[in-house]
Amino acid sequence: MADKLIAFADESVRVNAASPMYLIAATIIPENMSLTQLEEILPKGASKLHWRDLGVKAQRESLSRIAGLEPESTIVVASPIDPRKQERARRKVLEVLLPLLESRGIAKLIMESRFPSADAKDAALYRSMRKKGLVSAIDIDFANPAIEHRLWVPDQILGAFSDTTLGLKPSTAWQQEWDALKGGITVIEAKP
Image 1 (tube, rainbow, N blue to C red):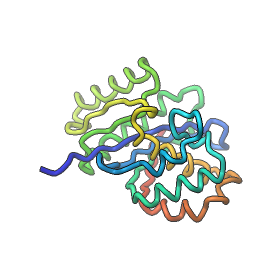
Image 2 (cartoon, rainbow, N blue to C red):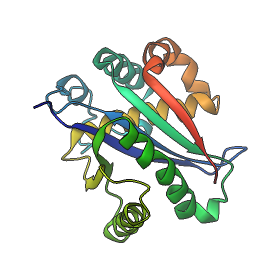
Image 3 (cartoon, rainbow, N blue to C red):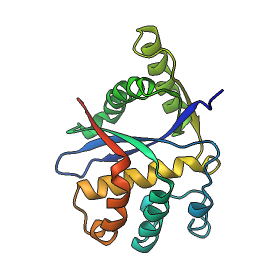
Image 4 (cartoon, helix red, strand yellow):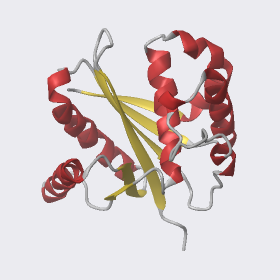
């Protein structure tokens, strides 16, 4: 029997952008994929690899190593959003993302845990979507990126994507690495 496909997801909110946006990246990562190369660039004292905590050199290295893994990712973007209604934007993104992943054969989506009450809201949305028949086979769960290192991959991809989309200056320093990676990324828009 083939292994069930699992995707790992992380979020990003860019409220200071000209057009504020809410994004979630979901990346298919096989259970047996080694992340040792990413673990090697974890900053001293850090519990997880987080895009915003890395300098440009480490970002380049991270993207290069992730490109070598050849991951398949989907990014769903809601923009423009009302920065005061981020949870609404998250729901809209998840309403697009979950059925899409299910249609691609993903059995489970593991999202970075935010905090118990926020995870409970996501779980309630998921149950509502199942009840309405919008999804039927996919399951969701939540994990801590300090323990579940596969969550690092969508974090890095989403950080680079949003920096590139916004044209932030450091993105030119790792453009070559990003170009090697972006071919495996599908971007979908959600109506906020």
